[in-house]
Length: 189
Image (cartoon, rainbow, N blue to C red; front, side, top):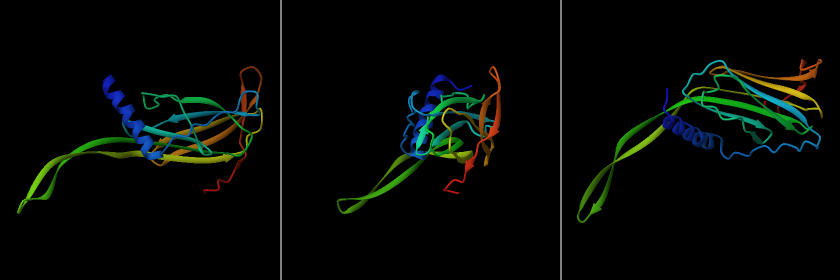
């Protein structure tokens, strides 16, 4: 079991790696409750955990959906409801399990010192990141105002994941029936 310090370092490394891997984060701004919108429940389920660290990215058009932090590599599914505008919604969900290791090598440099050539060796430490398994899926649909959708991402292993969109229709009480969303082809495909 990692210590609290190891978990904090791992979170810091994850945040830095996510920034390096994905560039700047542009958080999605939800429409106000009184503006036309649909609700999408984004649910992430991990059925395999091939590495000791995890980065994930949930994109809606050109914006990032920020999911709740998790120190257990998503040992249990997580979901978050997001209000979205009734316009084409291009979703991309990706995840990467990875580990890091550090190497130290001696770097020798030569330089002029008077009439001779001098050399100096100094240690150079580098941290390397190795992907243990990643996957990404995309889909696009046009949400209807007032509708509720479930966007289900399942990570099954390296290069094995699925993304499913279902519209939830009330069936009385707290029950729903579901029907597949009408997706439209992604322009990137």
